[in-house]
Length: 302
Image (cartoon, rainbow, N blue to C red):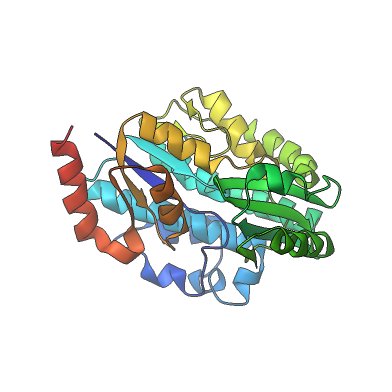
């Protein structure tokens, strides 16, 4: 049986999250040296109002915790990240150097924030099918952004447009319409231009064939070709997230333990909906000891 690391996207961040990183890990210092900033400037409540800082924190956290697990001999067979989580996943896989990821993510955050500086975001709709939500969005002010589960769909768009869709969703039987802690309309056509600019930045970056299978959260496919991984990373900001498909693909490839890197546990709950057997855990909630115990159990079951 196989093990997978999952890496969360925006919305999982919280103030002070850098203080919880493994003490012996040098990832935070390396990132701050590249960015020429103090660690405290990244994860304060004020800093996390900015897309760039949020994405950098999620990159650093994912890279630090995944390397800590590997140092403790918990080795994944697959990695997969939701949106910005794809970058620490690519680092963990061995396809992308961490130093390059820091520079690319800083640029990614700036491009996204500058394209839509205010008045936009994401809203999660629970309880409706994809077909039902497709009838509510107009693909002008609102779009399908994430297909996280069969009945959890995230929409992107303007505040006003999402508000109208949320009202209609509740009228049509949605259990919840929750605005997410994301200030840009990720995973829709509004970000096509910044995605092109990020793709141009990748032209100067050398990616390698990954050592660990890289499962795209945007396509649900395993990618081995460095050029395809670079394209996936550059354009995922403008593409619908197919997380449900990705987790289905993982299960079909015999993944029976999914460990979500800190912070948060949202991906763990979504993954459990797809896995009829096996385990999905949040490292932040379960801890390294539980991860080690379940990893050993999973390997013995192979």
